[in-house]
Length: 222
Image (cartoon, rainbow, N blue to C red; front, side, top):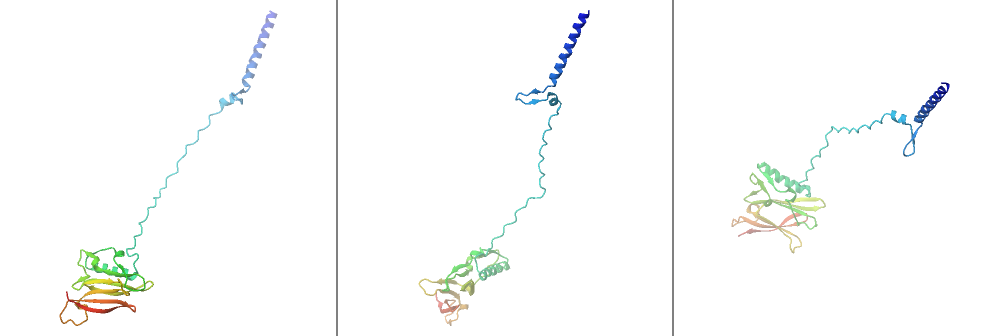
């Protein structure tokens, strides 16, 4: 019986030692596959990391986007000397006063001509080229259409050298030292005696000494 007790005590001690060995083994860190130690108990107790917060888009601006302003209107008289542009505006005003609507392009109405010898452009407005829609045409009568001639008198300067009605108006500068302005006029503008009671005369002008001067006049017999 004493021997059996001794054997029993030995088995008990061996079992306790085995339990202690297992407990020590569980507390020893185990190696990762890649070689780094990890505490199994600690890894099981650690909570999973929090996921990143989703990005919040910036609020859209409540201010309205700027709208482009209206484009500046082109100047209808661009390129014309001021005195010439004013003459075009006078015709427009006459048309509106007659309850009409001007029907022409102001910037292209005056024709560039050559009357003075200074090499600068001169301008002619022939009202044959324009119409007053919806009203009567105020620049035509029994004496013809109105013609307005501007002649250059120096850099940036023009004078209104001719402004009245005429049955016809021509500028002849072919083969001439000085251009001639030929006007077919109603008898009311003719100055020579008219015993035959002709209705028209031909008047020839030249630009001399800073003025459009009449050099001849003959009754128109046709």
